[in-house]
Amino acid sequence: MTYLVTGGSGFIGSHLIEKLLRNGHSVINVDNFDDFYNYQIKIKNTLASIGKNYDFDFSDKETDIRHLADISRSDSYQMYYQDIRDKKGLEHIFKNHSIDLVIHLAALAGVRPSIERPLEYEEVNVRGTMNLWELCKEFNVSKFICASSSSVYGNNEKTPFAETDNVDHPISPYAATKKSGEVLGHVYHNLYHIDMIQLRFFTVYGPRQRPDLAIHKFTKLISEGQEIPFYGDGNTARDYTYIDDIIDGIMKSIVYLENHSGVYEIINLGENEVVTLSEMLAAIENALGISATRKILPMQPGDVLKTNADITKAKTLIHYKPDTDFQNGIKKFVEWFLRK
Image 1 (cartoon, one colour):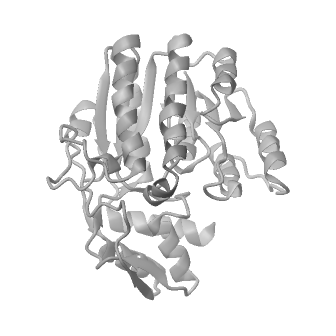
Image 2 (cartoon, helix red, strand yellow):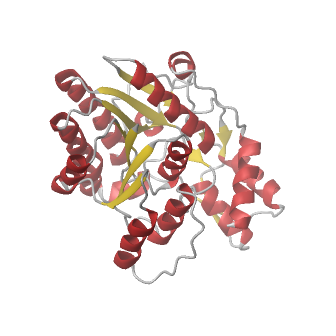
């Protein structure tokens, strides 16, 4: 099978591509190496995902990415330096490849930055996604997996969060773009018979996690002896999901789509284990063997108080079975961080 993965040089995407290649599939990676964080990290992710130990001599972004595309190309893998807002550029890719299924992970991420740049988030997360659906329609690609987010639940008072809960009250532009993607996805499913699964990811962490996210940021600052920004009283809580469990959920969603038709489903992927900010920090301190110095700050606009996934549907429909508890997941992450 040939899979097109958008955002394939990012955290989740690189792990997914690694799994797909190991399973003998062909992969087309579409990534624009956005400046949200250092492009060199994405180059390292890409090389790790294709199993290449390459001593990359960094020079400048454009040259480095084009060099990466050249050295990574193989019979089963090709990378395109491409922005999903550019429909013409995407069209070239769809014309040149016979694509069986699209896994769309690319997005402008982050709640707080979306408050500062809402129009850009709409351009990428809504219009960019629609470009992909338009091309699926034109090139008869009828299977599509889309990354949504637990942020669509907002400050839902009912826990755990179930897919049937009302999600009409997002509290950040990022969350609103993800809700828009779910609604528009149903339109394309209904009008053009694109079988689709929207996966609501719950706070994914693990090796290659983005450096701006709390677990990675805290680990780095603590290991360097710097104080950490600690928002609120430590009682905010998240359903942290280890990367291996997320990849398991995506792979099982692929199998489900390939074996069923007439599909439009929204599915939570979480651990169903709630961890407070204080507990998360304590786990990192324990794994590093270093105590943190906290800089207490007020809660940030757009941040939800708690996330907690009801994963009953995922277990029933796709046989999802997360098996990484938080303490072990943090140990694995810290081990990766210390050797990278």
